Length: 257
Ligand code: THG
Image (tube, rainbow, N blue to C red; front, side, top):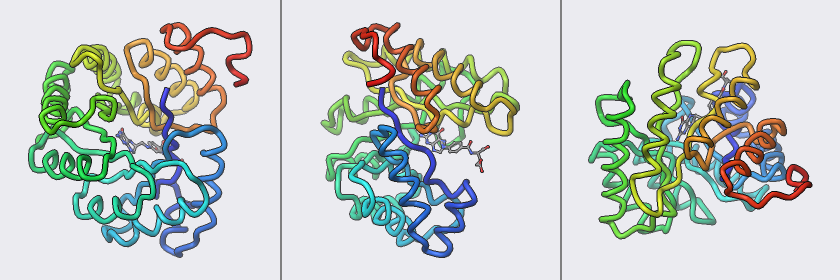
């Protein structure tokens, strides 16, 4: 399982304020905590706080001054990505493009030039398809463009797109069916990823909803997630599900490693 720490996102008040004040402390504390928890990447999201590439670069440099963990550059803006990529010390994860050519082409070029991994969202210029079949089509387009660009499948992550359970209850099943079909896009398959906390947006019982959905998604082929990596119950549930998918070798102490 590949875990990406979700916490350095201006959707959280403390991070928003820190970016406005250019106060490195909150970002570095969250970076350390998530790295210690075993995050494989640290997601960095500037959100709507600013559209200045320099602000995203500041966030990335601030995180890298605290931890060695590679960065997930969470922006769909090519202007921000083109600058942010230069600030990264290690090959990052580009998060994310859609299947729309206008977005996909510059993302592919940057991924190729810097040896980066990339997330492709299963949507196009008209938004997120309601039905899984159309999401599979978008994902397939991204995967073929990736291969055509000569890039390695182990660096591609496809995202079937998680919607809030509270507001779009029928969408969880479409996600799960999408994920299941993405595993058949190529052999070996691409990684399948999601922004897990989307599922529990504005809900009570957030942790229970996140944990239950993650296990169901893993059963359908998910092998990476942007999530609350400090939630030990979540991580342990994911590890247990991975054993059941026969992806890890069982050991009595598996949750303690
Ligand atoms: N796919 C990809 N990238 C993504 C997403 C995705 N990046 C952003 C997002 N979705 C994943 N990250 C988060 C981070 C936080 C929350 C949800 C998704 C979250 N925030 C609280 C809430 O909405 O209730 C609000 C913050 C707070 O508690 O103050 O849950 O889908 N590729």
